[in-house]
Amino acid sequence: MTRGLDVRPVAGRADLDRFLRLPWRIYERDPNWVPPLLSDVRRALDSRRHPFHQHAEVATFLAARDGSVIGRIAAIANRAHNEFHDDRTGFFGLFECVDEQPVADALLHAAEVWLRERGMDRVQGPMNLSTNEEICSPGVLVEGFHRPPVIQMAHTPVYYAGLLEGAGYAKDKDLIAYWLEGWEAPPRIKRAYDRLLRDGRIRLRSLDLKHLPAEIDRIQNV
Image (spheres, helix red, strand yellow):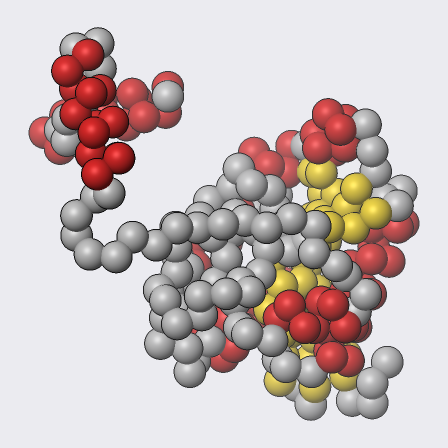
């Protein structure tokens, strides 16, 4: 353990608030960062209310030095994933960290130990609980730092990939988001859209705010 560095489980409301608010320090100089809704992250971590915890176990950790929080991580044992894939893969997620390799190493080690104690023999991440949650955004950004974040995709500091590789992790797969320049859709997409409407079996319309509860029911059914 690096001198002065303390990694401990999140314990109590004050620790949880520190966990939730750390990104504001990490991204304070990033003009493209879009803050998460604290209520969304808080709800996702609520084991009594959020359905993810019915089939998973989650532990959260903070890294601090001289009383100042400088990193965080969640360790995730997702039973539904392992039953479906017939493996023993654990996950880490909600990873935020200052640009210091020893801090990242200590956080990842804490998550790995916790997962190993629960029978996991492999670790993947960052995975923010699972790809089905409100805060999914798996992985780290490796290109396109100069652009605004893309929905459902990661937006992280430039140095995160280096920290994870420095801790012994390697890329598993690429997740690609496309950026369209200008306001006009590409001709190919426009032709497909026009063909869809001519077919007559599918209708596109805007959300009817006058009947919002019924609209929400339809969205949930889909």
